[in-house]
Amino acid sequence: MSESPKHLLIVDDESALREAIAERLADHGFTVEQAASGEQALDRLADFAFDIVVTDLRLPGVDGRKVIEAALDRYPDIIPIVITGYGTVKDAVDAIKQGAADFITKPFQFDAFLHVLQSALEQRRLKSENAYLRSQLEDRYRIDGLIGRSRVMRDLFQLLETVAATSSTVLITGETGTGKELAARAIHHNSPRRAQRFVAINCTAIPETLLEAELFGHVRGAFTGAVATRQGRLEQAHRGTLFLDEVGTMSPALQAKLLRVLQEREFERVGDSHTVKIDVRVIAATHSDLAKMVAEGTFREDLFYRLNVIPVQLPPLRERRDDIPLLVQHFLQRLSAESARGNVTVSQEAIRRLMAYPWPGNVRQLENAVERALAFSHGRSQIDITDLAPDIQNQPVTVDSASAWFPDDGVDFESYIESVELSLIKRSLERTKGNKRQAARLLNLKRTTLIEKLKRLEPRGELPKAPS
Ligand SMILES: Nc1ncnc2c1ncn2[C@@H]1O[C@H](COP(=O)(O)OP(=O)(O)OP(=O)(O)O)[C@@H](O)[C@H]1O
Ligand SMILES: [Mg+2]
Image (cartoon, rainbow, N blue to C red; front, side):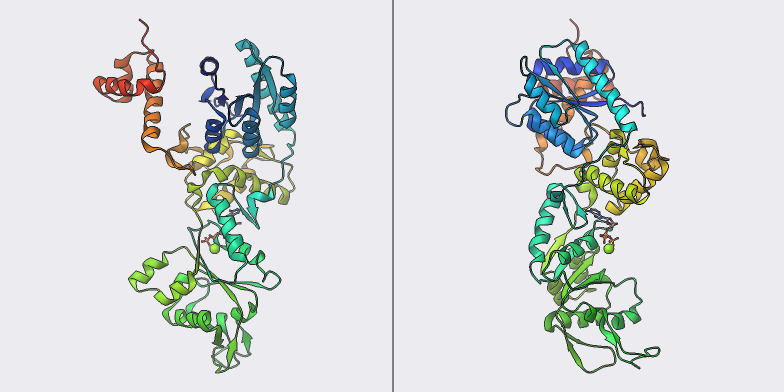
């Protein structure tokens, strides 16, 4: 079990109570974030894997139950604790049924609260030593093998479903490992062609000289070694779907032939003059920028437009970090089933590192990282940071990990930057017990600059004052 400080989110619209608890928890070694509303809490939970969330049940707007539901949905291992008003035991019981670890009734002494917190932590430790039954991934977060819950992925699922109903040509673009092939299969499996074949051909994996025969087939004697007539992939995909992977690497001669297939739905086998009619849906994929290749003259413009009838773009994983916990859970379930290991969980600390890492190899790289971590966990029931590869372990995690992440709804740039300034200044003043000269030194700012900033920011939040 890691000795790192526990990250706790406290949600209460009563700022005095919230801040008093936050301050005292910090004294007890917790790293505390505050949210003044349910909405704010959901935002914070979207991009950070807290260990504990403490929430008032009665909140205007999004209430405490919703906060707990969202927290558990995203992080099954989070510890939710509710604060209830006097005489509302029923609410507390409901919250427990919903998955809250414990509750405390207002008004309470801090020590009683701390006790509730510590026993919940202890219980969780015991629980994760046993196998922890994982909830199955829900259908609403997947289409075929593609998993995701971020806004971009949910929009993508919708697009894929719409596209699947048609026979239009689709061009899938995206960095390596973003799920282009999975998306192509999802389209096929949701299309009226699903009972027919999905035939994939990777244009880079096959030597240029063989690609044409592979795609269009050949007749006997068409070239040396063509001892019999053979069907090409195109014919195999008749009435089904042909997936042309890495289409950007096709030679100009083949590009011309493919264009004809798309325009006329016909072709000839290599060495044959007989024209074959075909009914095939084409899905192409590429990790290169075809529009740029068109501009550079290395890819046919007319073919590009024929392929790009419906563009589908897969976002890199670093732009949808909020999908990481779900993906990790998905891969763990699959891998632990394969290796016949019991249910394995991941510590929140490890999840935080995984969410902070930039993932140049995208989902494939994450999948490999989970597999490695599982192997390194040597049969323990929980994966911890030490099981992660060194570069992921050493990925700095800040509570403001939003620095590399962009929320679905966008941000208000000015106020976001101000909130970062405010939080740094607050911390420096806390550290120096309100001494501005020392705080300025910690921030590498001139004292006058700090004072100017304070004047501007002071109305936005309570900054610690120097003892008078
Ligand atoms: N959204 C996702 N949900 C679940 N698994 C995914 C997702 N995206 C990718 N994967 C997994 O990541 C791996 C790579 O996916 P895929 O082969 O579809 O990527 P790709 O974009 O075709 O990559 P490349 O450009 O390298 O060929 C596969 O094992 C796939 O199962
Ligand atoms: Mg691929």
